[in-house]
Image: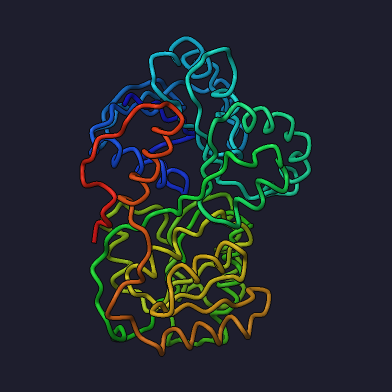
Amino acid sequence: MRVGVVSNAYHPDIGGVETHVRRLCAGLAAAGDDVEVLTQHAARSTETVDGVLVRRFPLTVPVRDYRVSLPLWRWIREHADEYDVLHTHSYHALVSFGAALGRHRTPLVFTPHYHGTGHTRIRAALHPIYRPLGRRIVSRAGRLICVTGAERDLVLRDFPEAAGRVVVVPNGTDPRPVVPGRRPGVRVILCVGRLEHYKRVDRVIRAMAPLGPAYRLDVVGDGPAASALRQIAGRLGVAGRVIFHGRLDDAAFAGCLARASVAVSASAHEAFGMTVADALAAGIPTVASPIPAHRELAALAGNTAWIRLADPEDEAALADALRAAAAAGRSATPAPLPTWDDVVAATREVYSAITGLPVSSTGVGAGGR
């Protein structure tokens, strides 16, 4: 099957959607599909990554939150019929609107990664204004893939006309070595994600003060809130125990995972919670904000996973949960969460249903552990 995947950004750009798209595309290619990623960047380029052809189109509007590449929109309009299916990602990026334009007859699959609101005051205010454009994408899509039931409920709340076309395919996890027991020395708390205000990393930094010198916070990721977060750490007198690693490659990130005693996500909005899932898959005790996606993920992980939901607005409760997680020690068995092979297999079934084309049996989707 020839698949065109439309994404706001792609590897080496880092983020939850970028990770989802990269793992999905690599798996589709491994399963025998002919996959092309259509994305946007500062300059035009074409390269092959993980067996996937990546076409990057130059930005017309380079503003971070409202990036637009008209050359990408033109490519889709002129070449959409060359693909058996188009799969576009993210309601919160204008690139998906470009994929829904035109009169092409290529079946469209839409994975919205939907939060139901914007991540800044301005974006939240613009959200209702953007909704008619979002409705165009939803109406054009033959199938919508949500990564949790919580996300599906948000989509159906705002777009009830999508009923009957939404399927839930949870995100996958990467296989990680499971090393049980307590980490020696300083107890390292791992916080991973794009440094945006809605991720509430500042609440985790504030919890470091009552935890004391036996704890260190590793912050992995970058973003517009990075400077403000460093200032908060300095004002609280914990700058020496809060390490900002920035963006890391896979090998360096694996080292952070190996050192971690605890993982934490204080995010206010998530469609899934990939950093929480990856931590649980590695057997790391995890503290997460009690948002619907995290609650669903905790249920999916089952009773064998150590996860506690704590309100990040309650500094004492968050610090207590982090202490308890560090004391619990890492599990000897990973949480039984879906793998990316499972995601690929389920997504290919969606493609088959919308195109009428059969999918070959390759063993992908067997679980990957």
